[in-house]
Image 1 (tube, helix red, strand yellow):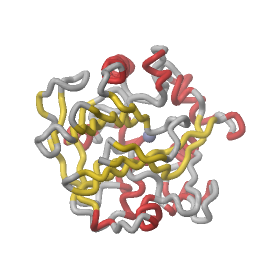
Image 2 (cartoon, rainbow, N blue to C red):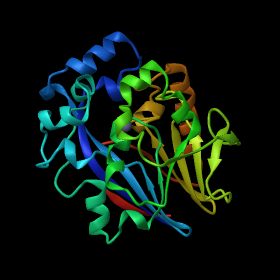
Image 3 (tube, rainbow, N blue to C red):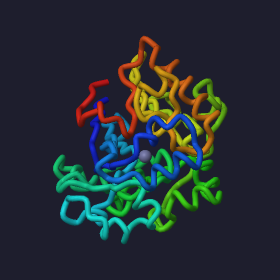
Image 4 (cartoon, rainbow, N blue to C red):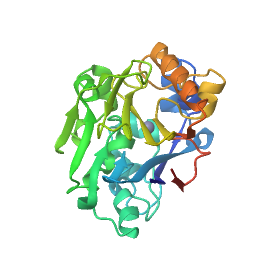
Length: 278
Ligand SMILES: [Zn+2]
């Protein structure tokens, strides 16, 4: 199985987003108000897996509309995102890096995708959905969809970016995997498992892609960097610190497994675009 790591845009955020070690008003204030020059640049990773049962895309990155000329364009961002999220993300999408642009360069059309799998509903993960119409399945854990009713997620996850797309939902089931012991075994052969890693959101899924004894763990936003689990610093953006800690402890356990080929976090600047042979 080949796994392509794509950067489908970038964000400039407060360093409290990856390393704030607390979800509180102080961190939230910094995340909205830090001037651009004091922010850090993080990639927005999307993963394309060439699985024996078809092409699988994990998350979708930003949409072209936030960055029509490929540069940071605050007015364009505010046409896509409400003001508080525009202030949080400072996103941009260089020319050629939107998900459909990168797929086209690889000779792949949206209708060639067997599954588009959404880890969670934050806009940097779902905004690219508009470029993927025709994909055979769009999949989201039922828990992520259900809890989007919470006020906090209504503020974080603009519904117009995802509500009109034909998203299929699956329930997590009991599993030996994950801090919650909840996972979706996509093909019922353990080759692709979507594992509930709550904390950033309630329903967020990490993904384990497995070939025999070896596996790659796509951690989504359960961690922003290996520092989070190695040094015990929780991200300062999320929903529940205690669950973040449990999810990080599970990721640390997986990272220490001799079969682990890589743990990839969606916004880790140390993860460049690359292809992993699994
Ligand atoms: Zn994210």
